[in-house]
Length: 345
View 1 (cartoon, helix red, strand yellow):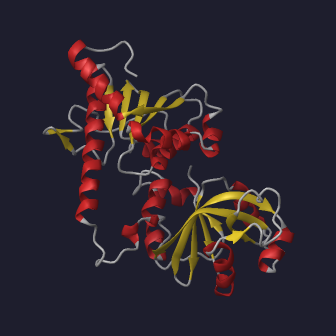
View 2 (view 1 turned 90 degrees about the vertical axis):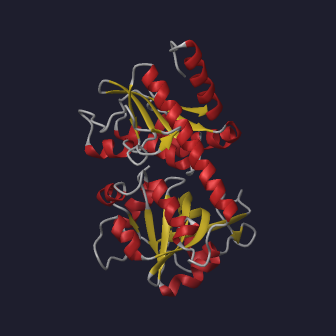
View 3 (view 1 turned 90 degrees about the horizontal axis):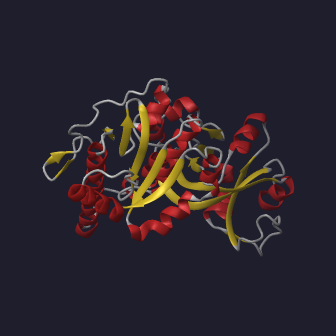
């Protein structure tokens, strides 16, 4: 997924935004279309008519991130839910039939991000601020991907407490300890995957931002490829997957990709995988989301979201599978005691 939407809210619309987004509306308070009636409370927003706005609106998909801007800052974020074109509903909600391109908002969250922060990530230049409803361009997305592994990871970071917390609100010792434990587990599982790949004769690539991490005194990138060189792949594609936690290769061919999810949103790894297969739909590869067995239900739920299934269904020659930390550890122990396996996973 490489879509990110920006929705400015003019000063004369702030009160209406608060009434239908800042505070969810009840299905019983207004006559809603049948597509929305199942939701008891919804947050709902829209944009007015216009050729460019319509093209952005029709490209929206469930789960796409959106940032709301007003009075010199990005003040809220959310995800696209249901979309519908309904001038009558725009009239009922905001006394504006022109505001007919309507979408619901899920995972609404107040934030505080300056335009300069986002503009720098998107290479928009000094003094940039949004001037209308927009979908961030592919060129700007590629600029963002030089700093983040995916749009989803950048979005999560912008929404994180770190981006809005003051220096007087440090993490507690318990939170710091938890983060450290997650980081150690992440590195441990990466190390096992590196060892398994090498023991089965594969070339192995470790995410470029993780190569110098150590486990049991050994650098993760030890004996691995220093650079990911994939003839025939565009720079944009290579840029996406060089941040994948572990990749097994046979020559120039990718055999398997692994995203270890212990410190980041589940979305992050899945999005990197789906971004990859969207750009190279004819390429066959086994992809794994690796997480704790206790998180298996949550991971599988995200993997079967309509947004991801729509991308993955046409590429039946590739697979996206769940793999538990426990399975990785067990497989490593088996290989250490009995030698390489005919099939690793």
